[in-house]
Length: 419
Ligand code: HEM
Image 1 (cartoon, rainbow, N blue to C red):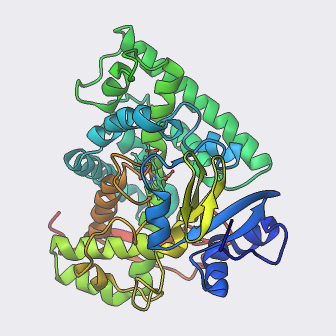
Image 2 (tube, protein in one colour):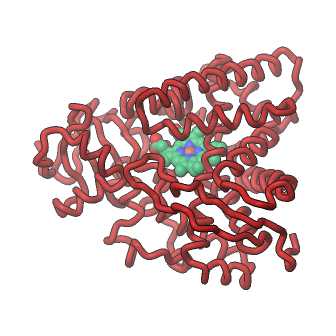
């Protein structure tokens, strides 16, 4: 039984690819409903948006991620055997590893390492850089250092290429995806060898590092992770750290589009203002459009009976700009976060609910700290110019990015910098 509206089109795959991020919110608005039924890739699916849908979708244990996204997307992002592929108690146990490794202090340490790497490289970039390109390298090298992974000279560029390809191709299908899958296998072989060397005592990472923790971690059955699975989890720490480059580029885009905010952040150096700015960038700019799940336990919601195995897509992009929750949602206004109550359902760039109990991202604090560190640099410490370029963000391309990757020229330390 269902009270949810159904799209007129029998299958919406072409519309989804054409409209990208806007596909779900546009139809929810059209139907005046928080969810609708359609087919994608010929499979029936319920697409749901908004804070109530977040509470429905992120109710602990209700959905599995198995069979909920195209196999190439799964392989390039979280992958088989990963924490995201776990359910129930096995998931909670494995998730603790990530929550511990990515605790606030560790997140700040990661941000400090990334900024340190940026400062070392800045003199080389004086004449100009594509921000997205250089940040991916900076974040890859910082993530490896943070994780206790040694990099041979020149290896940073290779690992950056591999990790970046996984992100770029996650939403595509074709030759680029095949190449990204091949590069992913190279990363996995490398990460697996690292784990095996640590276990054999041939490599000794710092005892509190991610590499040491993943190599030593025991699953709920008391056994160490298979080295292939340990490699997947190591990559699951490195790849998304490189992905933060996208959010920093969006932050630079926002500083450029709203120069009053660049001035304000330069004048008011308070931590809360920086956090509000970063949160508004995470709310408004497009990253993951949606997450998918398949029902584990039958339940009813909004007059629709969900059966075991049913497929649901929860709308991250549209929930962040839901007019029922956000005043003038399309307006870039960091001050809205000064009064935000911090609830777990209406701001969902990296998932919703309690990260310990659901699949919500464990790297949210790390993402915020890295973004804050780079926004502070860009607004207060580095002088640069933004030459004419194509800054358009194509919402049918997932994941999205300003077309130019954000080119900056004449970079130099600001005379007033105190960092
Ligand atoms: C770049 C910004 C990031 C975005 C937009 C992002 C987004 C997300 C989203 C939407 C989910 C939830 C998926 C779901 O419900 O199935 C997720 C899960 C996850 N993220 Fe992130 N993430 C980011 C950064 C990070 C970082 C920095 C790390 C680690 C260093 C990380 C590690 C993970 C892991 C391991 C999961 C799986 C959690 C689970 O299944 O319980 N992410 N991420």
